[in-house]
Length: 165
Image (tube, rainbow, N blue to C red; front, side, top):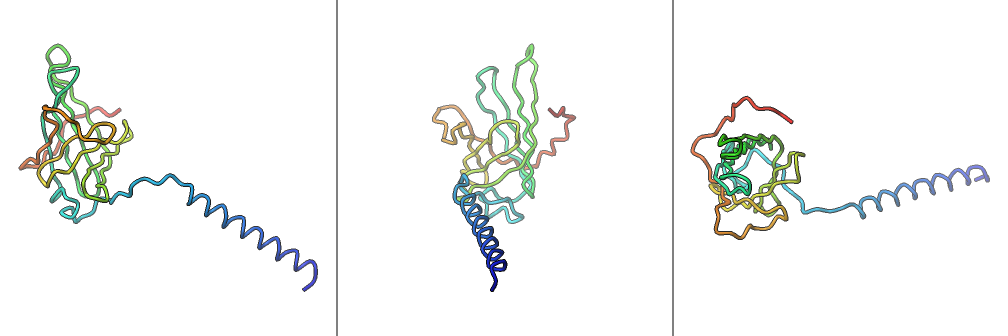
């Protein structure tokens, strides 16, 4: 092996070693979150029962008489949420819509809504018929007030005309 060939081998080895080291550093230093299951066609395994499904409930509201949440989960991980703020503007209700993706936590204890509008919204999966809204910190809200959504017998198509932001 002549000096030129040996030089190329050393450069190739150094280059490969550098890339392997950078790859290991990137993987090792990446921020790791609790893994989540992507929604699947077999939603019974997720703890939320068959899809599509609608969960609804009346929750407390700091700035209005109450808020009515209607959450429709579709197969494939799509959700549509309608929030109706009761009695906001001159006694009229105001509706806000959110469209996004949903996942279930690895332990099948949380439903996580991801829309990009705000941080992820989380619900505790109590059973296939009841979800409970969690606080922004992901913890259970300790209150005498209702924070539960219950499964509706019929799927709400949420076919309203809705403004998108």
